[in-house]
Length: 600
Image (tube, rainbow, N blue to C red; front, side, top):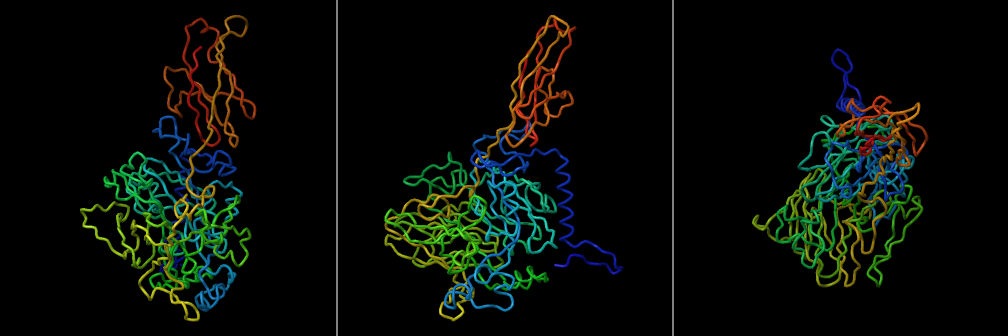
């Protein structure tokens, strides 16, 4: 991880990290000079994503010549890249019978709070719906693994990535990117490969735009210094559901993983509940080295922990976390399932308590099911190693591989184990047993477990979780959700909202007196967090494109609504027939109004 190397002539040259950082800065400058529209990302029409314009405008920010897209099918999501601390099961925190032994000096990291957090990571945090101050406050607060994201065929997803910098390592000025691994209709500009796209530099944002056409389970990760950044935690799952109009042959089910357009004409990919599990590995030495400004030879990778959704057994069985209104992640405790079939979950409001040690590891890998239900597990591997996950006692159908439906003609066979290599995904379906009970599933590589410090539990520190089957269970309300557990505000992409710019105008024709002529006056209203930047008029049969040199600037006054009045024709032209004029406005977020016609 050398920052600067020298030639034999002792002339300084850039290494790859420096080259990528320079490339990202240049690209960001070019983007800034290109006049790309910026706007606010709103959550439920209330709180703006920032107190200053951030990202591109998903709702109305296109110039008036751009391709239209249904407003109710445009979604926004926001991530912030930073560093922080996560927790692996240690004997210090869980005791020698449930936690792994210390690996001096690498684990627990002496810079961390051993009773709570013990592993230094890089991360993507979900900051959807937070304002600029709240987003900035997330620097140094981590999320391991990265948030679960989903979209739908026919939707448009606008994902804004903010680079907050590294709290513990300010000497590293790395950019970050969002690479949707396997996205089949990607264009280089939004593909997240920094050599051909945009690397988001510290203190800046960039908004990626995706129109998914293919259902299935994908993954995403940072592509800047990708081996290091991915291994350190900047990786997550993104999946795509079929268009609602394409979900035919559902039968008794309400959900389907693949549509007819994807090859599932018979409705084989229907399900009752869905869970997404990201497989990974942790080399505690590499994480220690990044925290302590030491170089790592990434070709000498040796895993100490094997993870599901950023947790190792027994932490995989704990509930999902939640986020409060300020962006702080909090843990929930498991109170079992109530008589109404809903999971009894209690939020721990203080993240510094010992029972809150998993607040930076918010995704559970526990699978809940009601007897006889059909379950979908979206399995993704973004580690270095091949893995085989075994489901003893269950019949598994693999109906999706790498975001492609697997038809029966591919000679599918039922199995009880699934092999998955690095960078691959599998969509696994099974029918929950008719008898309530607990059914474990796990990595069958017995060497891929750290084991408890006292040797009593060989499963500790590995990829193991459970399928818990109940006679009575309330419906699932969100992906990965426990029964009756609702999504918290901003957990998944939200419908984009922006009030934009509106013009109200009146035509005035004065035929007598000293001030004869044709005038247009009126008001302009903008979003409450924006201000009016420009207003123009033009005389034309049809409205010219925004930015056309024929538009004439109009002065205005006020601070919202804004007032304007302009003389468009002098007295000598007053007797002529009516003429057609157009008005156009733009706010400080770069959002254009619809051009309005005035005849006078």
